Length: 212
Image (tube, rainbow, N blue to C red; front, side, top):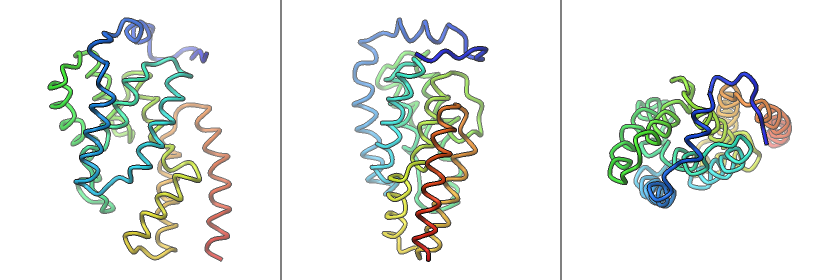
């Protein structure tokens, strides 16, 4: 169990996680996974394996930080329902807000409770640090999402995807490193920062060898 002393997130969120309406939440993971899979096929991005990598990290962090697992997983699946693989495109730059708006329609359709919608939508909007998080759940989502580019397997998946787009190797490696640096700066949980620092050193060593 992890205790966060002096956390800005009070006990109300923890209590809410205990009394969540189980009937209301029972299908949200399946529904959000099905939706993002459809959207991934339509948008041709992000790489599905990277999405699952973030979700798996989210499951572990949700257990460690004692936040609702279903809210974390749903948020991670819905965070990129609107996306574009083109670097620095308008959609890519604003995908957090666009995805939140898109997700809201489906959360309403799925009859997700308002208090749970609020947590999910904030987690989606805040996962790039442009909007403040309002819950520990959103912090967990943000840190889990970062790990798509802070593990060796995630970086290699993304490198492979850039190769599919015919990007030259040196440019692709630079892009992956840029993503890794961006995500490192977004981390807020101490254990995630430590793990990412170890991973980052190994990844940079491998890339150095790759470009020799």
